[in-house]
Amino acid sequence: MKEIKKLLNEADISVYDSNKKLIFTDIQPSSENKHYLDQLIRSQKEKITWQKKGRQYMDVKYPFHDKKFYIIGSAVDVTGNAHIADFKKDVIIISIIIIFVIGFIFSYYTLKPLKDIIIQIKDISEHNLNKRLIVPKAKDEIYELTETFNSTFNRLEKSFNNHRQFVTTISHEFRTPLSTLIAELELAKELNVTLEDYKTSIENALQDANQVSHLSTALLDFARASYDVSQITFVALRLDEILVDSKITLCQKNPNYNVGINYMDDLANEDESNYDLSGNPYLLQIAFLNLMENACKYSQDKSCNVEIEVRNSSLEIRFIDHGIGISEKDQLKIFDLFYRGANKNYDQGNGIGLSIVQRIIEIHHGTISLESQEGKGSIFKIQFPKN
Image (cartoon, rainbow, N blue to C red; front, side, top):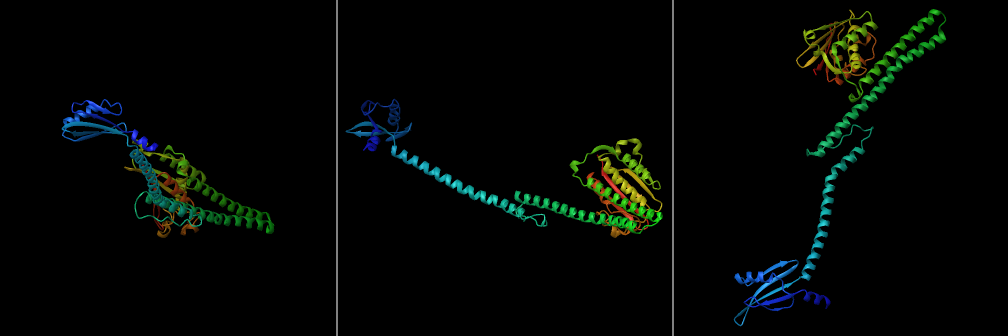
């Protein structure tokens, strides 16, 4: 009964005659009643409705005994508002559930390719670096991510293989001279009798020790040339000055070697900046020194002719010798680490120098190429892009 009384108490009625005189009301009528009453009188409608501050109003024409009366009623639709409020709550709850379900499904299918990638990556280790991620057909962001991971794994696999090969080859290369050195010393200890025997053993041991020293120095240079480029210091320098320094170092080490440096244009006198380059002087000197030494080592006249030339977009340096040359078969692998071709019997070496040279040239964004004929000589050509 309280709820019904509440609903009834929420309603009020006002009655006006044709002269707009209030003849009945159960509450104090609103000042706006006459405004809407004028609208109803002027219009041809039988009723008009409006709403204000949660109350619903209705103005109705009511003829009675040839007279016109106007009834204005207003009420608050408590029950309707309650139903609307409940409906809003239901809509909100249902909307939240639908959004959650849609979001879950969307996130599942969106993140599923990433979860698949994570599972595949976890399955790749140092023991199976040859495995690669499955590349999706659609060329989207997942495709780019997969390609990036595969590219990274390619580099890692290459690095691991190089490291494994490097360690294996080092152990082999060091084992030979060290074994010879140990054997020589053991023989000297057990068999040598005269002073001449001891001198011969010492000379042989010293030769083996020098070989180990040269090998360790070459490996150290290769390690330095294999640093991350971001860890190498680059400074402004002149290539021709580095060539001269390399020549002086080589000739001091081997006085019987002859190295000539020739400018193939007149730009040296016109503009010395044509030979400027941003690079690491220590590494470049190692590269030039190796090429000069190889040219002199494998030439009967022990000479190397170096030509430097400025081109439109590059600086070109040619290391020319008239030595034994390199076969076409050996040219394909001449820059491989520890590779020695048919000339390995001509003079001692460890097969590291040209690998170091190639790596140093690559660090400086240059290229190196080889032209050679057996019995006629070789030309190592280096090109650096001009700054």
